[in-house]
Length: 114
Length: 118
Image 1 (cartoon, rainbow over the protein chains, first blue to last red):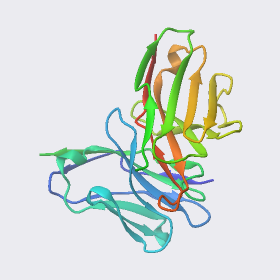
Image 2: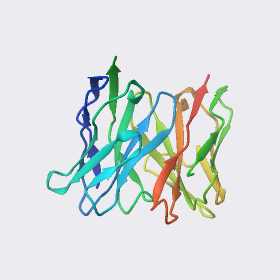
Image 3: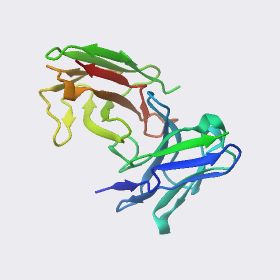
Image 4: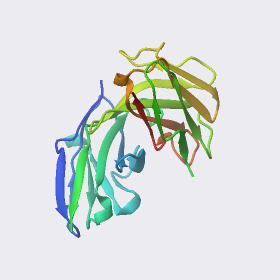
């Protein structure tokens, strides 16, 4: 069975600082990986996804993530955080693309200090 | 593109009544939609997979008679919470699967519906 671990429940960074949110997955084959962001009381917005090819993927809002098979990781990064990035971030793994069931991590709450 | 809407965005009802939540894909056709439930400060729990023109597939532990799902068209799925009780109060989120070539088999999420049962 597939699973996702987001080891950091809360992260606080200063505006302008760099950010890295960790995600580790467990899946028997090549995973399909996603990062979503959720603002309070809202649905989820897709930030980026990895299906195959280049292991460094670019997303919206200046985010990027790198797939590292050897470490079973798909960490999300942003070089300079903005106050509007404060939100909950979810990593998810899908079996054969996003169309099949997604398994979500428990989320990381990002707080940005001005 | 890839917009999913939900209606209503919030609803308050009395215990014992039924509530219907709609999920629509606005600019693409979705043969598959998913319904999730999210408790405060927790992750999303998949409740069921809704397939157009066929019965929904429910996850283990989800009562199919309580959470009725209908996927009557390629752009609309509905979740009806029957005989709602306070423990059904939650945030319900749907997603729609876009298998078109541009979207590459990705799920897009609606804004969610906050259900409060008194």
